[in-house]
Image 1 (cartoon, rainbow, N blue to C red):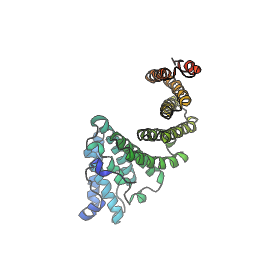
Image 2 (cartoon, rainbow, N blue to C red):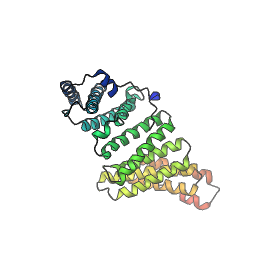
Image 3 (cartoon, helix red, strand yellow):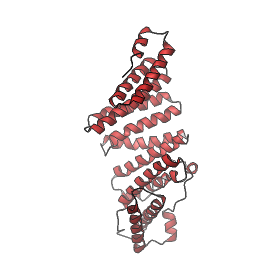
Image 4 (spheres, rainbow, N blue to C red):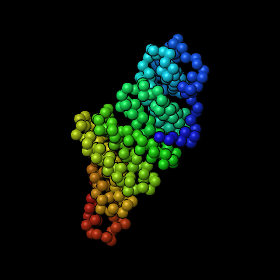
Length: 302
């Protein structure tokens, strides 16, 4: 997977090769660094750049020790440290984007990418599922960044990579992947729509709906059922939108009505009003066409 690092202007990180050249990793030094990292974590629930940089240094030192083979026991679980680091970086990255849009700090997600593809990683993660779960999280968020930057081809590459891993995890019913892949398909559809590939966008939404049907029987709690209804609302709305662009008039009307049904279930009045406005607009455009279309379209959802 080729990532456009130059376009994201990532701050240069210290990798295992640089650490190897310095040759400064000792057991006592690693212990001090780990202790310092833990202190920074305990100071706040919210990740900050200093905390991330210290933890990154700790991980690369640990990776160097494994590669060099000069330390049997690091004194901490490197897999747990990497997992925590990747999750923190993703959370920090997305929060930064929401608050400050695209500052250099908000593009720090590539630090997670570099670590997740370090050549020592297969030695750390004995099972591929936890590692691929972290890659899915990171590449879905990376896709979001590229999309916001208007780099839709890069966004598509990132989300395709995430989905390729997520589909296998979903088949194995690993973690929450059967539910999470629904959002991935919807995100891919949105990117394809931006690229004016509306037929492919429609297919991606259809995959999301298929994933919803597979997951809905497993939704037990009220929260899970509400999430299914919300995702169904979004899926049918996007299907309607893509069908309208493709000139599939009858399908688009049906999908808008299906979306409104789910909007009512989740009490999303804004979506219901939006759909009614769209349907009224379609009526106006087609009022001289089939008479029965007028009857169907004018049925508002209250």
